[in-house]
Image (tube, rainbow, N blue to C red):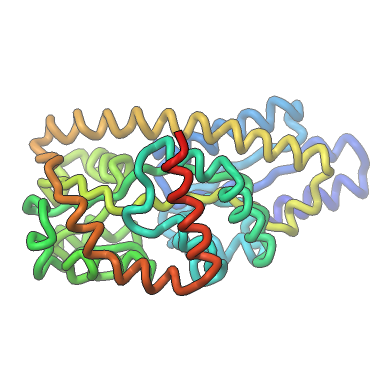
Length: 327
């Protein structure tokens, strides 16, 4: 952010020539090969191309940081832009909890129509209250359970210590499903499993693949059970301070590039999931598809009751469910 502010100040003092060097930091906690990180790299390319290099988005990997810390950095202006999981917004903007509720989304189409339509627009707009401009959503896919044993029923979760993200909803969901939730930063999940601190964890296929490709060995958990219990998106945001320094035309250009990057992210996510299945098979990882999702969905009733007590969340959930019923 400081680089960005300095470039703008110099541009104001020295005129149009200096204005060609505006640089905006674009941060992610994921590895460079992760679908949203690749989508952000494409967004950077589009912005540079369309401004003839006048505005550059500098991708800044923050793999050692938590998403909550990264979000706070953007809110305070220490970082200009970042993509973080929607769970990081729950305590700040309660409406965002609707997107993380378990067993809410029925398909890719259901997710995308929700995020691309009025509901997604409403939630992005609500981020204005915490000093952010929401640009788009990335879809990491369903989160499922990786463990040393198959998880097919609620009974299989009994006494299972499961690592979950630093999210109260994720913790409540794992416990409602029968597990013993242990909150962990994303970067420590696999280490915690190898050290025996937890027996299992939840992850989407792309992140699961990235973890054991990076270590070039079989994942610490040999079984991946497709509980597909939740599908929280990532949100690409820019600090309002950085946003207001851009001209209306540049704001429009940045938003358009972000929206275009969504298409690539979704394509890459599907490709990565196909790669994950092939790689898992080659490493001897068992993929469990026969999961009693209805039983799990019934078990998480208390989680819905807790979060739907907020009338805003309750209305959003009703609208999201209604989308699935529309052909």
